[in-house]
Image (cartoon, rainbow, N blue to C red; front, side):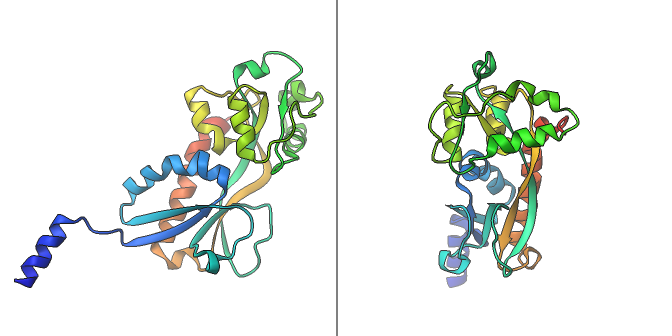
Length: 230
C-alpha cells in the first residue's frame, strides 16, 4: 500500500531538479545577457537548477555559498580557484542611429570601465582596418558626467543620450531587434570572460554542462556581429 502511495505521489509531482548550482555573475552581463537566456538553459537542461547572484570582482565562494562565478578577467582571483575561459571580450560604439548622424558625437562614459573609449581606439588603431575608427578620433570627453555602472551607460545610449562603448554580448539582443546600431562593428579589447570554481568543472557533471552551454551561447550571441571583425 505504501509503495503504491509513493508511486502515486511521485506521479502527481514532477521530480525536482537533480542538481542546483548557485551562479554569481557580473551585474551587466547578468541583466543584459544571462537572465534573458535562463529559460533556454532550463529547457535544454531541466535536471539543473540555476540560482543567480549578481556580483562582480573577487568573491569568497564559501561564505557566499557560490558554486560558479562568471567574471571578466580584469582582476586577480588567487591560486586556489579553477578558471575556465568562456569568451573573448568584443567592444564597439553603440547607440541609436541618430547618435552617429552628425559630429561631434556625444560620448557616454562609465566609472566601472573608465578607459573603455581609449581601449577601443587603441585596439582599432592597431587593427588592419583602422579607418573604421577615424570618425571617432575626435575628443572623447564625456557629454555628461560618468555613469556609475556600465549597465547605466548602455541604458543611456538606448535612450538617445549619446554613444557608449558596449560589449557585443550585452547589446546583441538590441542589435538583433534594431533598437541599437554598431556602425564600427566590434573588436577584441584583450580581456575576456571566465568561469571560476573551487573544483575542476569536469568533476561535477552539472558544472561541466553549464560551462559548455555558456561557451556555446556566448559564441552564438556574438557571431553575427563579429563575423567580419578583426
